[in-house]
Length: 195
Image (cartoon, rainbow, N blue to C red; front, side, top):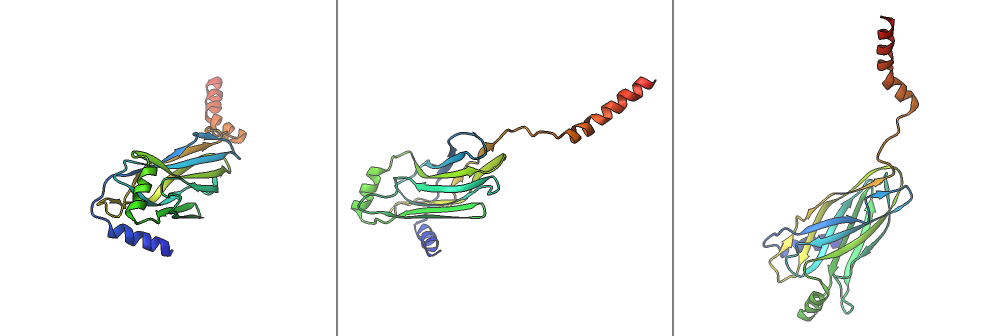
């Protein structure tokens, strides 16, 4: 909890202007079967400057999906200087963050050499598909921290909803329900026959 407070304080300290950064949730496919691994990736795009951290809350239906694993990308740390990264999940909400430790000009130059300019993967998340249904994944909240000398910080990051269909989309109608649905037509046919 201490990290989140520091992260928020750093984010507010460097906030001067907000641009439209986007975090997309990309699934490896759209259709899964019960027991399959659902793989989701968080991708950052519309980058304004050198990214030094992020904080995100991913909402998912815990009745349909069970969290397996989280792995972070390779673009917010360098071998000489690491980053603080962690995650925790509770009741259908996965909170994850990463913050670069380096502050020297040399550290930031080395980080800039590692980061691609337009977009990159922040994290990969895998779930187990538990039962049939439409599983929705969406960001509850997200922020991106840019280089400390930059005027950019995005406290409101745009995101898109991702959906994973588990099992067949059509729902089987039970035999008694089918009979009830056909009953009015059968009664009408019987009445017409008697005339």
